[in-house]
Length: 608
Image (tube, rainbow, N blue to C red):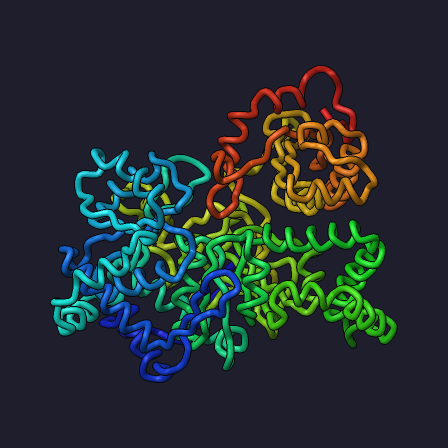
């Protein structure tokens, strides 16, 4: 068993809550920009000071009071990532309420469960479509009162309703919660089973954000620091950032649609970016495809290899050699600066979480000039437990624990976590809460190891560990991450439990396919045709072969099959945080898995 702990830097007063964090921002930077709001297409972003935002949040809080929301009661928010979500969050805390996020992609069954389990009294949704979905389950959510729609003036309705509520009532409510009270209930997106509501306290957010700011101040706290949120605010990572910018003094922006992400990044110009690995993979793959389509594929691949070599050289004694520095400068002028420009031109730092980024992409982006610091955390740990630091980064790890956090690795490899950022339990589920803890340590279900410097490396999920018929333990994430790095691959699910060898289900990226086909001089075709195309199969086979180099012979993928449809949030195979629902995939595609292990042969690298 190994353990790593970092001393706490900031410890909140027991009588404080998140409203005190915002009060401190008002006192120091009240008249400086806090949020910028996206206007109509092409219009400038509108800045709002902390004082202006505070005034509007207070007005919305009065509306919640007028509509009968009592301290401690729950208010649901179901929307894409936009300004109104952050406004509602802080208005709820001002009114002493507990906001409960719902993904806008949630099914009627999920919405009904979350609304009823958390006893939501008032719900704010984004669109008429969401409102209609909620009306369809209203009979099963007896506590639910009004449903307001953002696109139909929800914020104005709340402000108007609260005009006669005195300021003193909101000020009284702002001070009611203490550090141990619940700040929000976030329902796990759930790769298995019914979502569980993690009760996160004011201390969870207060402690982890203030200590994170103290640890990575040069990223989030420098004058002019700004970040653009595009991840779902129903996810704990985005909510963590929504709070972190307050003590950091940074400026926050929102964009609801990833289809406009690149132009929004160019307009907003963030200095740091928060994302999941899939976004970084897509940026790399789309840049590669554009270069290949423009006849500059060789230059791009040379520049990418140079960026990776340069980044690796930064970790060597004496740094990169002179010749490599010269090559890197040329690569930057020809290719790399264009990638920086695509991310807004000012971003020097990015924090990646949710899954492994992989060493190749980590070194590539650092060579581009964007240092991607991998971190690790869960809903139950209020997002990050550990993160690589600007002054001490080990690419391929998820860094050391943040201040106040402790990590322990059990003999079987399971990661256990302890600290003020760990949730207090699952809502209405004492049995699941008891199962989640051992002697005060939260059992993450993830597998990993700690090195001599206390840096954590993630190797997989305990529940996802595959044991072959030969008794070999295989962590699928290592192979899946490497196969997914191929421009044509959208998702990869490694299989082989109780089977004689490891195999994989692979899906193609429909967005990347046209560019790849064009670069290969091939005619356009649908995914249904491409999965049978010899050139496509050969290219995927090479990707599998490359991935196999990272593991032993017994762990390598021996056969694979390409599915005719992708895994998406909409079709139920991905969680909203873009994790594959492995159990659902294995159940629905059982016949494809069976075919991989049929008696018709198991040749290495064969496509079934």
